[in-house]
Image (cartoon, rainbow, N blue to C red; front, side, top):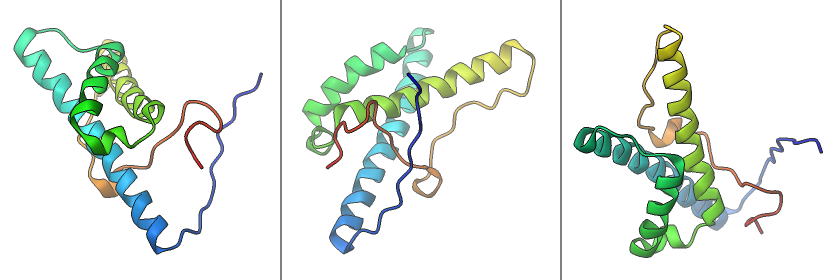
Length: 124
């Protein structure tokens, strides 16, 4: 089976635009919070967090933050996966002797968007 990336151009009304911006902001804050959590845990314990560890923590965050609970859980996992891949690429570059480029905190204007794991999952 062939995997494809599909990008849609939306023409939202004012209310939909506000909701989309809110969703983008939540995903951006989730990314930054997860990055902060990885840095903090490494400084305290000397060990890093894995993607699976952060998915477990995400469940607790969703219980504590109602706004996160309103988002699709799989799309939040895709955001955590994006951070996980950034760290994988960082460590690959360190190992190969390239310029590493540690994963950065993202400004809302430099956060490209969010994704869904499977087709039709969570978007209506």
